Length: 598
Image: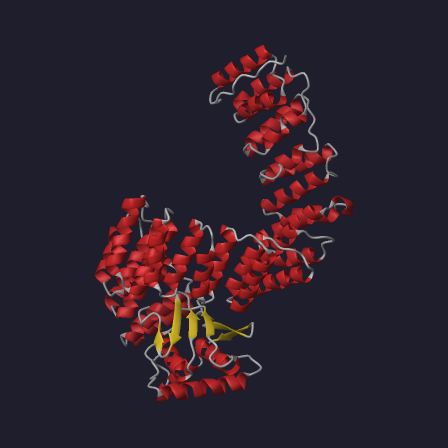
């Protein structure tokens, strides 16, 4: 009969290990691979214990690499290197499974040493070891070494993992064009390959390129999975391409891809950020199980669309479902309160999260409170939040107070905060523009000139307004003050007619923030060429009757464009959804979902 192994005890000290080891020796089980590996795993974590490990291996009747190989992947790099040195000193030769476990977590210097050892031991022709070495060089931000190794390796050694490792690694380093060149030359691809290229474009902000690769995958009849679907949905979100997003969502449903938490959150986020919060709610409500990130995404989406009561009601549903909130939940709830002027409620939730869930407020939460009080005109309360913070306020917190000062015309407090913000973030043009607009609103044109001169001295250029509108599945971009489009003349003519018609409805251009050294009629013409108005004019030319126009802006919507868009929705009987840097505005019948509180 074989001896029964002792019940494994937790090994936390060397004395406990010695006790367990003696029991194994007494029962004749010390050489059993599983037991020996457990002892070695504990010893390998401390270089001071390696002599013990050496003796254990020396007394093992059949020492072989398989005893140590599984340990390398679980050890810190320095401990793994020490264990390899012990292995070589026994001598116990590595095998083909040793280096693939050592290399992935190896720092660059160790990877180079292991590369030399691979050559010395003649393992450099082993594909798994080659792939691990490629990954190590790419992780160490040496694409040059990885590319040289890849190019000089025989084609017979390179498998789909080799190619995919290169594509994914180059994408992670931001070298998406180099990755695409390799991707196009791949002799075969798997789903990881496709997702590496698609997600690489997404991370680089090249959303339309990501969708092009996704379309190519589908055209070849490749069946997708949840990872590819999530990357494609995120690409649609980034491009603001609602029609494409709906198409990808239908493809997911038709393909039978499981809607897990990651993919569900991506789809909900896509509909929210493309201006269709009702469709996001439908997807959310249809999910049989909802993770915390999906709850957070839906609450945040409702808040950004101005449906603040719905956002707070959804949070109450989340609590009733027994889902514990986190830091992001608190940000979304406070944002909902800030966008609706619900000061009392916001203050209550701030305390509720700390008392009920032990969530200590962080910088972003204090920023939300400053925004909450600031938007409501309670600037002293907003300033008090900053004074009472347990940490120094960052640029976002101070920027929230500056924005509130601009909205409510508090020039004295705003000017002081504005200069402080500029010095903290001297290369951000938006900081200078906000300070200049604050001073312009008070008629302090000499000080406005000083701000503009400071921008010139520091070589800071004002970020141009940019708006994107999707019509018939095509995304068109418009920039403030310039237009390069085949229908340029028709768009300008429509913009002029658009302003003529809304003037008849009562619209009066707001030129208060246009620089004073421009003639009044030129000020109004400047406003006409704001990117949002050009995008809407194009939408009115091309979109079907009564079709909702959806515009995405890179900046906060200005006061004049906000007022003009309300009148456009009335005069042309259109719903217009504008997503700016801060939130969504739904314009319909001459009103906006923000109720002019933004």
